[in-house]
Image (cartoon, rainbow, N blue to C red; front, side, top):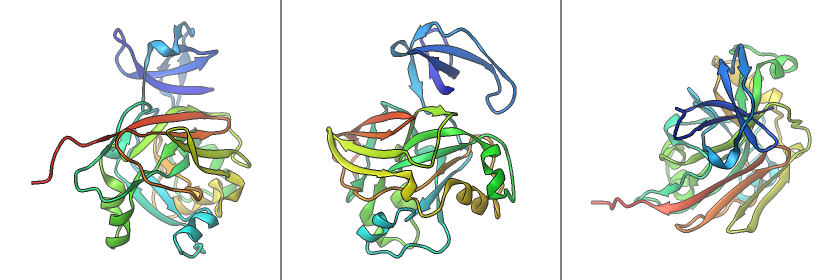
Length: 258
């Protein structure tokens, strides 16, 4: 099932589901008990929102060996985790805003996991019981700030630096799906999830060994090689085989540094 968050001129933001290009409302709690209404509204008649509002966004660094190599970094022996603030989240079609202090903003196409059931000390073999589904993400990063700062909070944390969407796919096989990124139609990144250093189940187990994962939390699983710059006027597309395409325009902030 594909779960969306959306709104229309007649409907406040809420959850829905897709069937043959049509949207039906969801009543209840998508992390618990819910009911699906009839899919009647054409998808192009609704505004898609970020498919989830996470309490936290957990990211994994250097989870593809080729990406680590392109930055002259070692492949980690245990997962390297960091956070992006929820305020960085935007949905499909929303603009990535290049801030006035930016030096080099780059795309990072990633598979994102949406947690569906709270848990702590989750064993790998039970990890999938805690997953609602999967979506596409773009871990937008200012590469210069990332290299200069001791921590990556500034480089990763600007508003609009985390597009996710277009929906949550609950029926998805993480074993061998192609992740790709195009900028203005030109292919920049392409790899398979089979190339991940740490599997989704291992990442969930590791993260939950020191923090409670909550329904709606998002786990980004790392980016393949081929990250590159974004500029105002670009359109960046993250596509994951079996999920769909997340597309966002890039604009320059109207605010100037004083």
